[in-house]
Length: 239
Length: 191
Ligand SMILES: [Zn+2]
Image: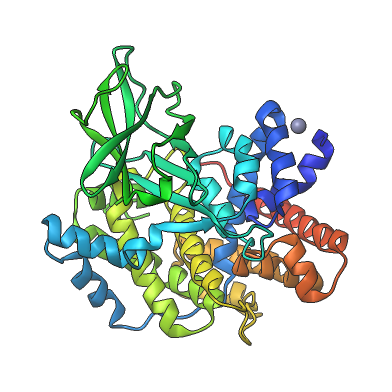
């Protein structure tokens, strides 16, 4: 794709209405073309306005008190679990099928944040030609790294997958991030990695058992080279 | 205009510190926008209520991760709304289920209205400008844009839904967006 073709599709990218092949071609171009990349912001601004043109409807009067009641639920473990399961609609729903192009198009993750990938993934791809067997596990930042995001993508039965993280604080040489594969409260290392100065990293995860046999995933800060079991602060968690 | 009126960013910062009053204030400011958007996306009021609650609960939980460099508060909220509503739509077999998302119609007296009544909020002024801009688009462009924006359809899905050539859909979306951007840019005033 040349710049002119790319410019014609930028609005569609921000709207989230591109089909996979356009999206991959576009992101490959954006990875190298600063000029086109700069245009994205203006489009995001335009798309951001569109919500205002929906027909107006008044939320029912009781809704606000229901919201205030919900956020005043007890905190601590019980409240957290209740909140989390409400948010995600159940324990297993964080395992969502992802379209097949996600793996093929992982190159686009190099350019754009994980959050944006989700927007695309959720947008307009329900009739994807994928066998809907790819699984995607979302990891959220803990208090130690509140803006961090992580995603693990793998096929059921496979011993390898791809981990993508963004917005993790950069570490000094003596320390590394380590992925933990959790099953029956046993934690097995899934590998150690550093992030780029902008907080981004992508690496292939190899596991002894199929990745879908683990029930949860977490990332901690460990001495460089990794630890046999987690010792440091947890920064990302799938639960 | 009102010095005591906290900015969106100030409210989010207070929410990040678990200030429930700030969440209530943000709700007053944005609940209508959120509810209107998701109601237009999912069609039925019950789902719209549930998603609205979910959106504000997420804001409560995730205000700490809001990054002003990435998006304005309004844009951040709208992104959460669209993600949540598209999630719900994706779980349905057929998205539209007899519901067709629409753009609002501009009442002719809207501008006159703003000259008389009480001082309109910044959001209300912007709303009028955006509504008027969308109303100026040809009907065929409004239609494809509504399917992309409110239903999360891809170019190809829109082409299938409306039985149009793919190239036509791409062109209509591009023309519509070019025009909107041009209009919005010309409204933009330096801050
Ligand atoms: Zn370019």
